[in-house]
Amino acid sequence: MPVSPFSAAVLVFSLIAGLSWSNTTCMGRLVILSGPSCVGKGPLRAALAKFYPQVAGRLAKIVLYDSRAPRPGEADGVDYHFRSREYIEGLRGREGFTVFDVRGDLQALDGHELEQKLAGSDVLFEGNPFIGSGLLDFVREHGTPALSIFLSPLSREEVLEFKAAGRAVSLSDLLTDMTRRKLLRRTARQKGIPSLKDLENIEIRAAGAYGELQQAWRFDHVIPNHDGEDSDNWDAFYYPVGDARKALLAFAALLEDKPAIYAEKWEHDLIP
Image (cartoon, rainbow, N blue to C red; front, side, top):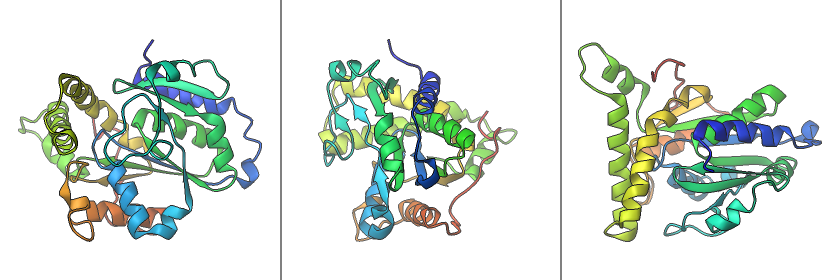
């Protein structure tokens, strides 16, 4: 049966808590990068590798299993382990694995891989905010070194303005529409005319954006970014421009433990 996003966080916590974690004295730092669908996590990671190779080179990436098809430019074993739904279903119950439904796709996390990589270096987890929240619960309870970053399609200032008295703005509807438009543009760029299955997947992802944004306050830093994966600002020019540039500068600074002027901290009640 599919696992709800909230249950996914609980499953991740239970999984990694059950591992040996025998190397905690020499454990690397877990870097958690999360945000709603199409907010720009993938382009941000790619830009970091291109323009800050020494910083990116210090991060081993935890590679999740995913039932969806690879997007243009994605590689098996690098972005995800792309496998069939049947294969990933078969990972249920195997020691060290947990399987969860993420925006209509099945994903699986190999806890042993995470443990082994953390024993030798810093590790980057890039993915769904609910899975990131499960990792956050674990590292905070066990004192594992961590840096958590949430990439947001809205800034704190924008959220406060939209919530102001007299504003007839539904944040939930706004986030759904923003995410839908980003996903439609990304799909058009990658595949042309979207199929019915594409449109159904887009609606699932768009509908989940508001609930995912509610997790942002739990992260150490929030980086506002209006340049999602549909934006030319990441790669149309030599260097990222606009919010893509600001997000890259903030991400690189945080990874190097430097002040990040474009990063924010959100209150727990900012997104009701």
